[in-house]
Image 1 (cartoon, rainbow, N blue to C red):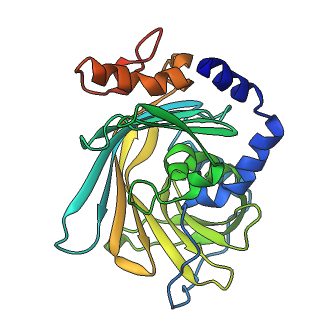
Image 2 (image 1 turned 30 degrees about the horizontal axis):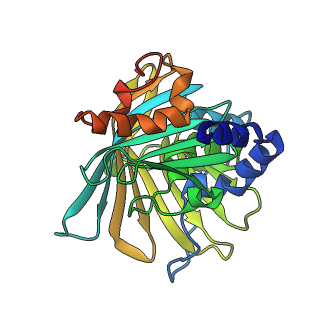
Amino acid sequence: MRRVRLAARFACAMNSARLRLAARFACALLFGLGPAAGGALAQAPALEPPPAGVEAAALARRAASAFAGERTYLEAVLSVREGAGAPQRAIRFRAWRERSSGRAFLRVIEPPAAAGSGWLLLPPVLWRYEPRTASIEHLELARLGEPWLGSDFTLADVLGLPAALAAARSRLLGVDAGDPTADLPRAYVLELRPPASGERVLAWLDAERATPLRCERRAADDTLVASLRFDEVRETEGRAVPHRWTLSRADAPARESRIELAEIRFDPPFDDAIFTTRQLLQAGRLSAAGAQPDARLGAPGGDPP
């Protein structure tokens, strides 16, 4: 009976609700932060005029491709450091994403206290699995934009950052000449305006490959809210992919949240059973059998990559 009720709730998902979801969380997908901001106004960069024939929307799409294909698998470590000398908290997780449908599945692997926790996004429905109680919970979509597992990243950042880069209204402001002596490459600077938001995001994209270098989120009064740096760029399946993302807030400069990619694959074969509540429960069955919870082992009908 429980499965019937779950299936019925899935059947009620509407395409119009999916569009509302995309608009509502576009800002969260870029940073996923609350409204708090620093006390000083950000300084606008001095830029060269934008070159003719270069379109902002095309640059944004190229930047998004550094993070995702139509289907993307990744394994990463989320860490939080409160300040110099403070202990670092780390969480290892795996995620499967499908761009066109918005479907996504995420499983925490370590530490043991959180291992087996899972999230399943089937727009406009979000589910969470709690291994301690072996229960599935239907969450409000607003939970996508909340701080995730004690960090300043959100679940939306992990599951949908590329979509936000490509979907936000964008404008090419110009070219930052960079500084070779400081290892700052020449970069296009885009202004991104998420839907239904008075805020803006400035994004620096490498002028050669449009790989994201850094972003600044600014409030409506141009106050700096947060900065997101991308580095450790590595060639991966023909793409220049930043493998380290470091997020810091203007109101807590000593605190850093970081995502470091251990592995990323573009357009691997996925078993569609990954995107099911049955897959959420898989960790519970493995734990009951005395095995380590691991989403790679448990996709019904075949192993994920």
